[in-house]
Image (cartoon, rainbow, N blue to C red; front, side, top):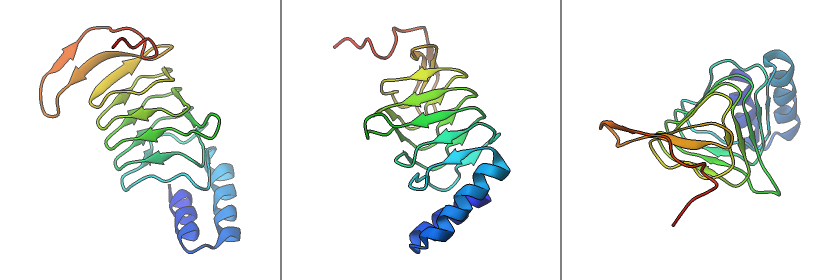
Amino acid sequence: MVWYRLMQWARRWRLVPLEMVFGKINTVCCGCIIGRGADFGPGFVLVHSQGVVINGAVRGGRDVKVEHQVTIGAEKRQAPVVGDDVFIGAGAKVLGAVTIGDGARVGANAVVVADVPPHSTVVGIPARVVRRREPGGAAECGVGPPLDEKTG
């Protein structure tokens, strides 16, 4: 995380060569690739950094926790947006122009290709909601349809 934060510092000051050096050191030392433009708020944590790939166009909120082997990637120049207080489990893939709502949880090895509602837990391929909860309230359990099969 130190190398990522140094990379962000260099970006703010438009020290592009230094930003690139910090990015390469992050890749070699930590085993993860975080694109130069990726922007996360305070409290962003890579629980285990090995194998993490985050596209440079990704935007994330505060208190985002990411486990190992996670990919958060853009598709056709449209990148994911990750809300505040989000957990992304080991091996999960978040692809394309999706939004992960505040307080959401993405289970291990889930493949997210559609928006995740706030305060929801999603699992599976493709990811589907298995739990919804109100902030500070009780959880509502039950397996729903895959997120890409929304009904209106």
